[in-house]
Length: 139
Length: 145
Image (cartoon, rainbow over all chains, first blue to last red; front, side):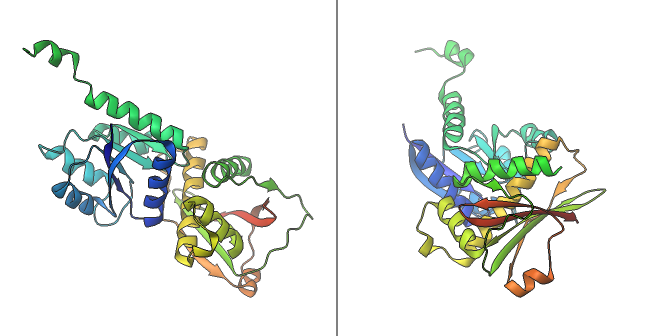
């Protein structure tokens, strides 16, 4: 199954790298979108269906935290998994994002297999119906 | 501190660039011809420090080409700057994580500057480690922020 991916990073070089790493990893990309900050990412979401968002933390205009807050306030976008791409793994930096509802983070430097494993795991969880929901369905 | 920085330098260069640095001992020389690209990031806090890298343009180009998976000939100066800033940023972030540094220490936005041979000698690096990376010189430095 191919997934539509949105990469949000103010560095065009970094966006190109993440895309390259995704391709190398063998992750099945459907459509690929990108934005230089949170505002551009929201613009992409208004026009396109996205399965997963990979976002930087520090960006001008609208940073990663503001983007996540906006997503969580939106009926259609609140369930899209967000993965932070960050240089830091200190709890002081990561925990506020996890509390906002970010699914996971990937620390730079990263290997292609790390990205694939994380994304596949998250999307597997995202598309697997919750057990309680399954039981309540009346087919 | 320098030992941890050395470890993160190896980790970043190997993981992101498939480059394998060797530490240069005192007196060992690797010829390096300018211009040079210097990048640094400030770790702001009670005692701010600046961590940085300096490489000749030829190595900056090679790093960018490896990073982006393209030919060296097609690499622009802004791309080299972006790559070295990102490298410095990754090193500083990994360093803070390895040090289990407190939240009072904040990474600032990385910066970069081109230096001609003459400028480089006017601004020598104080606390530094030198590496041989594919027969090119890479210098890592730490200074007060």
